Amino acid sequence: MPVSTEHPHSVSKLPMSAKVYINGKFFDPQDATISVFDHGLLYGDGIFEGLRIYNGKVFRLEQHIRRLYDSAKAIHLKIPLSPAEMTDACVESVKQSGYTDGYIRLVVTRGAGTLGLGPERTENPQTIIIVDKIKLYPQEFYDNGLEIITASTIRNHPGALSPQIKSLNYLNNIMAKIEASKAGCLEALMLNHKGEVAECTADNIFIVRNGNLLTPPTDAGILEGVTREVVLELAKDGGIPAFEKTLTRHDVYVADECFMTGTAAEVIGVVKVDDREIGDGKPGPITRKLKSLFQQLTMG
Ligand code: PXG
Image: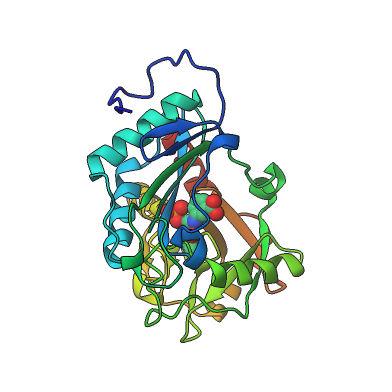
């Protein structure tokens, strides 16, 4: 099916419903299926992106597409579409859904093949674009902040699999997420193999200390979050000194403020870490300022 380059701002006549694009065709969710022999399922061999739609526009689409192709290159996966075609396919998928606000899950798998690890056993990588509603954290957590714990599960060792690759194997993060939920928390802080602060299971982390905004650098073993980049830009524009800096758990405990960023979470305050209250136990002024600047950006 040819994809349209028409902007999703154009008023859709289609009813609003979740839609799934698979290799150029659109399906209702219950009809969207791929092979059980897909190496994405059998081995987690594939990559993904999570994006947001705000007011009919895909937020930071270009950055997500770039990261997807970077992930693909790193795992020797040739995506059947060009970045421009993928961009058009995302825009068309949003249009087909009729959603003006929602979530996009972009997945490229290695494709179906015989059993065995080798990618040469597969052909036809599968391109999947799911447009769906997004379930946000309850509002009270945006107002009052979240409590998190440090997980004992560390982030992927960069020598095993670069955390910069958004791969379909999220098990280490899922293990950390389970630790969080067993501790009654919605997120967990993950350290790297050196014991430094890396990020959370699906969010990047920031702290504020003496008016400076600090976040771990890429070489701490993090996914370079699109929201993280936006927040660093907003800080720069808003006159908040911001730096990438190696952080320890101690730095987090004694921070004046702490918050997380992510496509799903946006900007959300963290007010307790491993049972230590951060600052005065409420989302701080810099957190609130950046949260509101971010919201203005998504509304604009
Ligand atoms: N770290 C990790 C490990 C992530 O997976 C982020 C940081 C934040 O990156 P962005 O680019 O979103 O600012 C992520 C993002 C999902 C889902 O459905 C997961 C993410 C994003 C959107 C949806 O689980 N992870």
